Image 1: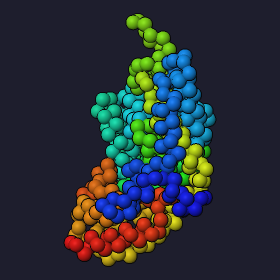
Image 2 (image 1 turned 135 degrees about the vertical axis):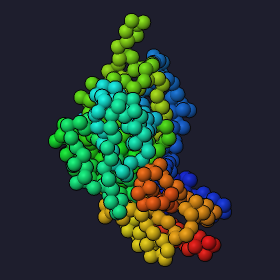
Image 3 (image 1 turned 180 degrees about the horizontal axis):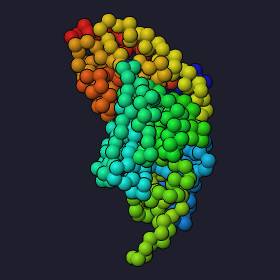
Image 4 (image 1 turned 90 degrees about the vertical axis):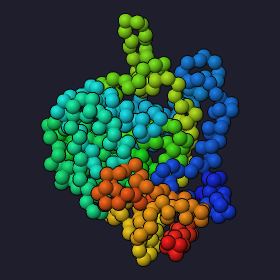
Length: 404
């Protein structure tokens, strides 16, 4: 892995100042910063090769289409899909989950069927399934969690039944950083002949994801959380499922032939890509995956483990601070509160010190309700963060305490 100073130089925003203070960026769980390579890739296609994909016979369209499909191949290789036809580009994790919730629901869900999610889910992996249940008269079942912020797998096994039609589970809790035992979840579901969707929004950037080894039926993630652009996401689906499911949206490029009597749909993956797709975003995502691959995903994961260990030691040592989510298996995310101080006040003071953190429920309100709180301060770190930044955070927390 490259030297940390060299890595940080790849990300131009990390060199800037906020309120006259050196930026310390600890909100990577919300969106990660972009290396210059990604910025350049998007700039290049918009400057030199901008043309609507899959439609024109001219040079610009051909080049844009080729770049877009090359990005699809990069995604397939990155997560070890069996082929690029299993990779559908979407607007993001939320768009991907909604696609499956609608398409799968229309084809397979009927009144009285059951859908399982966990207590750790982001709202994006709760609300689409609730909407499906309301449409179809299905029932949403929830895997409970414990005080360490872990799902209780024994209770999950009790929920599985012949009525269970799909399990939708997060790979990593965005609010607490807990790593969920998705392999165990999937194995149990498959023994019940139940497919599984894995929300990888917080997992894809922190280690190696192999969808064939995981054996998930669907895997979804967002480009902007893995150092790519916003507005681009990925829906991986096993070919057998994508072939069976109806399309989510209708329009250009997802059609084969249109008449007023009947429309036939395009082959995979285009059946699920209606309209003009975000081809510049896809190219930027491909550049981000190239960057991550060259750095080394195992090396990234090890560096982030070290950052988590040091930050946990430092933050837990501050008097009056409570950390929420204490699983032994976590990504480099820490959620905490300072006794008697609202999380917004903490976040606003840290911001004036140049330290960017997340405050609130993190779109995981059921998690907050479990702990009886209305939100936390979330510090989400990645490989370009440093021990010195963690030390600056500790000083910032002490500053907050002294002010209140």
